[in-house]
Structure formats: C-alpha cells, structure tokens
Image (cartoon, rainbow, N blue to C red; front, side, top):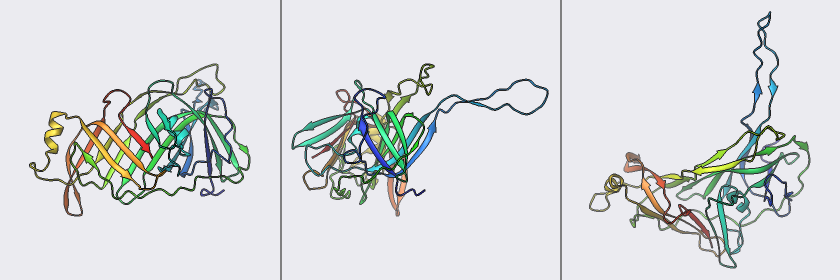
Length: 309
C-alpha cells in the first residue's frame, strides 16, 4: 500500500461521537504525512503463579486512536467562507466566527467545545473511522515558507474496513509564501527567521466501563499556549529584550498580512505574550536571541486570533 495516496476527510459532529458521515465531495482536507497510531492501548498481563516460567496470553482491553498530519494554512479563496480545515481547528478548542463576504476568525474557546469525525483512507482503499475527535494543533512559520499547522487528533475507532474513497474534491486555493509581512513584538519590528507556536491543549481520556472501547468522552481540560521567536540581537538603545524578560512585560505580537489576494490573506495576532526564557543564538554568523514565550489572555479566550480575509 502506498503512503502518498492517503485521504483524510473531516466533518463537525452535531452530537459527540456520532458519525456525521463525511463525504469526498465536500469534506476532504488536503494534508501531508498522515499517520495513525494507538493511544492508551490496554494489554492486560496475567502474572499468575504457575509451575512453569512462561507467561499467559495478555488480554486486550480497548484503545483510542490518534492521527497526525500537517495542513497548509490558507484562505478558502472566498472572503467570509471557512477553509476546508475549519472542522479540525474547531475540534482543537477554537471558535469559528464568520462575517459574510468579509472574514473568518479562529480564536480559543473554553466552553461548548466541538468534536469531529475523521475518515482516514490508507492508500485510498482501507478506511478508519475516528469519531469524537478532539486534539491539539501547533504552527510553524518560516521566512519564505508556507504556514503549516500540525494536528494531533484523538478519537474512538472501530475495526477498519476495505473501502475505496473515490475521487476527493479539495480546495484549489494556493497558499501564500511568508514574505512581505510586518512582524512586530512590543511594537518593535524585530528581524526573525521563524515564528512557531503551540496551543498546548491538555487532552483527557477518562475510562468508562460502559464504553465499547473502555473510554468515555475525550475532553480538552486546559491549555498552555506557547511559542518561540529568534530575533537578531540589537543594542539596548534600539530594543531591550532582556528588560522585557526581567519585568515580565506583557507584549503584543502581530505578523501583519500574509498574502494580498482577497479570500487568501492570513493575519495572526497575540495580544499578551511574555518571555519565558532568553538565550543567545547564531544565524549565519549573526548574533540572535532564542526567546520562548507564553501566550496569556488579555480579556479572556483571546491568547491568539487567526483571521482569514
């Protein structure tokens, strides 16, 4: 079986763990390197005292499944229309706010958390159905590259079946390169090569003796969003990074607009970051700083906003 012919579909659930039946015509998600694994698999050993030294066969006691993959962050091509990866962000504790013909905004939420069903077709011919999926997402932004989101989704999964997906429809919008931005932190236009951040969602997988797989509803019970930047070092008179670290200064990060075509413009804003560490680095002989940061709330559930216009 081939790996580059894998197919992923995702659709929001109206009721937790109830399959809304994603379809290839509307629910395809263009992704990279999908990989399926077991999560919290229970194999019960039986260490009985017997006359010989061998072991008895273990008993399988249920498992959840995880699926990981990367997705290009781009607009849908039409301002005010959600992108095909929207169900995944919504299942990672993001709310989706749509302003018709104008924008789609994703920001963290702490209540009424949604879930999705993911269909994973290995080689397009072997179907795994993951229901009740919730998860975490991290982002990688490198100068000249494409914004990538890495998803780790956990769900309930029944026995796979031999099922052919058929032809999948994907959004044809081409992502924009990360150039011509206006990155600032604390109102300072720092020179960075990369901005990486992770929502740090805490995923709880409580046991349930009544469930067919031995697990109750998968829940997001907390988050600790964080990130890193690597600005070029400058004189204190130009900008004092260390003073902000020592003072625990709350600062805003903005990247400006990535892309210039309506329906495919990405903005990322963080209103209240603070440095967690500071150390020196080197980039092609140029002194840099390595600055891990935390993302705090400003007015509640606003550590981050991703706006597509």
